[in-house]
Image 1 (cartoon, rainbow over the protein chains, first blue to last red):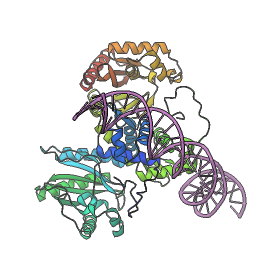
Image 2 (image 1 turned 180 degrees about the horizontal axis):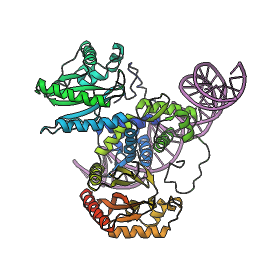
Image 3 (image 1 turned 90 degrees about the vertical axis):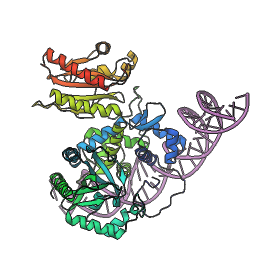
Image 4 (image 1 turned 60 degrees about the vertical axis):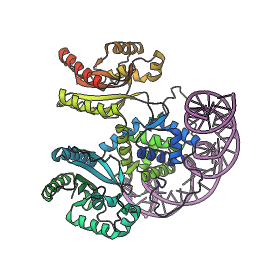
Length: 262
Length: 262
DNA sequence: TTAGATTGTCTCTTACAAGAGACGCATGTA
DNA sequence: TACATGCGTCTCTTGTAAGAGACAATCTAA
């Protein structure tokens, strides 16, 4: 959160509490709201993004006037506004892969009864771009837009296919290699997984983010060799090999349909 | 477009080409991309929002880095980015009415075969927030996010229900009263329509935006008396009174289901 | 070839926005 | 009653970002 600027992988301390550009503050505000996932008071917002209160009031007012933010019901809380929704729809319209991908994912989860997701890289992080819940009694939760460390996921291994070792290292922090249960992955293993996933054309991980699920993922190509997204299914960890295999087959079919020139 | 700041209803000439705040420029850029509905070169973008080229480059770079914009395939064009989509999804998630409204609209168009839309006020303008095409051979086009003068639509008459005359006047410009075919509505008639729509609880307009369609709309309430949105059907202008009546019945059912405390 | 248009980068100045902080007005609570 | 906490607005200063414009690199057309 505090290094939202990203791309500055080097520990480039800018703790000098100098003046910040308004636009950056706005970007931080939006990111902050995205992480909180709920309306928030302006005072708290200022604290959250570590900005002066007066500045925050000014910026929020601009954003509310513009419709990017809206005052939430209560009166003194803000959250995303209608305009962001409209812009988001524009993005979908302009993005064939996303639009069709969403449909495929929806279809897939209906067809299989399993939770299905479309994933992409978003500024160097794994992001669930669209997900459709399965029909199982226990919900496998996974909010859209959720950002997860790449090494925790099967999709992560596919999305990094074709990158140099250095590039992978740049994208994966030490923390990312620590699983939720405390186990630590070895970077070499992760890189080996990537190479393997690239060859086999799919990836399965078991019990990484939690102990009860398995994740099956396949790549979606935007150009030969270029992995633009992945589709994945989240299934119970005790799913039989046979069913797993047939689900992967389904995934591949749909992913191929999505891929462009692969 | 050039007075995107809105709310400055008075002809407040700010032609003094003074320095503009970066954030405002950004807001204009986003609005501009929303109107163009396609990726655009940075040079053209600068022209489009009437901003200095150097400034535009700087801002676009920031926005691209932040993920709000993306460089489009070609290489030197920009359009909305993934992050706006994610924020948009957050908005949907936080907005029951929109989320359920979208479903109702989709259902409605499947059920009736007619084009169905969810509409809201967006910074004083009528906006199609979601639309679902009907099954008729001729497509009644209406892009999501499209902004149309309030007096051209049935929904507009419902959305303004309960406003004072002065408020209505403030929201409707002279130009808004001129229909696409050149006919001019009288403000008094429009206001009378609003009052009537408020009482009957629905509104039908025929041949306003084009000569071939009729628009049936009903209000969706967020609180007793407060019209938050409308649902509408766009049907051929020669639709029988009987069918029109039954469609309105359907609309009302669904709108009631959506409304909160009405 | 030359001339013109466009694209991306860079430098330097100064107009102006970010920020500190005070203020008044609500709350709540001892 | 006094005291604390949070909210929204306002004023004033100064660090800095918006903008003008120069520059090299492409591309196109004549």
